[in-house]
Length: 397
Image (cartoon, rainbow, N blue to C red; front, side):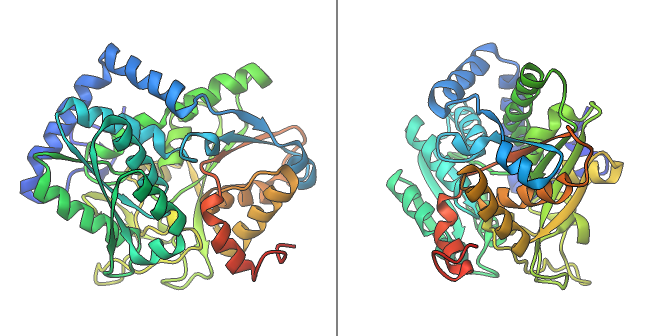
């Protein structure tokens, strides 16, 4: 069972951080391992997931989208209907509860699309904790609505005007803050990235998605889906829905951001086009140049615009258990519009990458094959950006 006691998934993972941060990570790991087996903690978390988040999230058969796409039957796991509008709240509530049990008074978070920042600010408000969210200035411009939502929830949003001014740089600043303040702060990493124990911890909190799906699909369809598809930036929603199916005969597909081209700086296909290296405390796959410098990336989706990926994804790719593919900006935009028009559902641009791949392969599959797409977030936050990309309202045809 991964990770091992040192936090490795095969040869990926580990804990590559300054020595001053090791005590904080060991304290977090010890507290998490104790609480993961604590019945009262789990009951409290389940209560919040049910009554506060609104779980379980529905499993919806997208009949019109399926009919339009071809032969396969396409289902949507509706994480977009969670409180705060994405899967991120599953993890932030778990980590906020953990922080409270550890006696921490403040949460620190990094965010790209703003979904994780909003979810962290929400959890902080619910538990009476201070909250500071780091966000790249470029992402703040693209996701102004989520910036305002975080501020309304009482969080301090600190813009980062360094590097590419996106998630990578926000994560750097959040780690610097954590190193200075871990005695009273807990860093709520939003994806299955970072040093051990974060990849394990975030995966475990998000695995509620896959556990629900297994039961729902068995009840509705009498078996397991043939294929599960999820978008991958850092990889939290994908890991959450994949994990309970790793030992089953279910095809698992992760969809990365293919951006606008294959040249460096035009995409964010870390698993497909990256190589091995260390980023933000873990050994994994990343996009870097010949000198080991992390490269700038591009995606229309701020949540997928990260040059690294969770180490468990790197391991699953190497073992051949999960296939990772890419969808371009254009393909994601087309899928965004198609899901709006065919099902009346506005997806997050991140999730639209997974929808795009489902539409691409549905026509070639045998009749009655089933695809489940993890609809990881809703697209309210993206409407302004999509209108700009399409050239204005009314040009989505």
